Length: 210
Ligand SMILES: C[S@@+](CC[C@H](N)C(=O)[O-])C[C@H]1O[C@@H](n2cnc3c(N)ncnc32)[C@H](O)[C@@H]1O
Image (cartoon, rainbow, N blue to C red; front, top):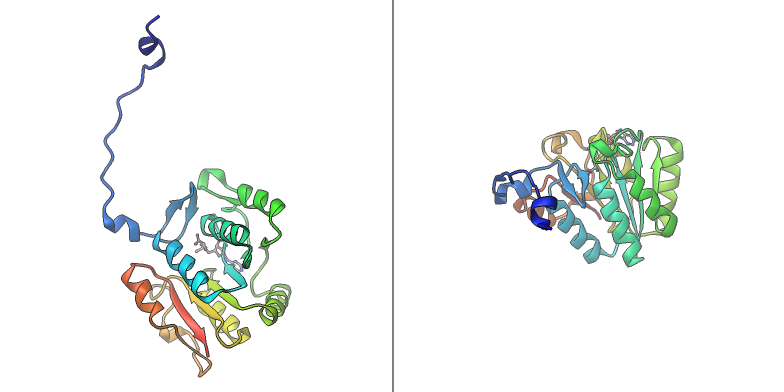
């Protein structure tokens, strides 16, 4: 039998456009097969940021499709060096496989790692704020503001942080910039990490509690 003729009747292979360096800085990419509203550089920026500062508690505000959440969940579960929580007010994208949602996989990970949790909760609810405030009191904290109102998230949550905790906002300066955040003498831009983010084409903007 001619195996090639009976089993390998493939359609023509289409040419794909070559990936350029600019593709690496575009947001809304797939990562690990799931949807992520970040550029790829967010992954290695956050990886190094967590490693350098040895955070014990990382909170993502806005899980959406969940590739960033699932990456951070794997990081927390593999290293067992920090607790990771992600919050979203809805789960439409989270569970939608056609829309690259990762929720089904995140919840499998939750069953085997005690270090990670997804909460379907409004980040401004009393419940969420009380829980996160309590954990900030116990652990060195990083908060990533990537929900529906980044300025309000930053202005609310940076007030709960301790010295040397950090807070990163996403979509800087497109959705949030110096004009709509309230800075006081307890919080400042985390230099040189703001420069690193910019030079790597990321819209992440880090701040340090002083
Ligand atoms: C830009 S997406 C998050 C992207 C995700 N962090 C990523 O990197 O792929 C924003 C998400 O914030 C959620 N959101 C909006 N308002 C919220 C609130 N008050 N509390 C929690 N999540 C909220 C939205 O439902 C949406 O899924």
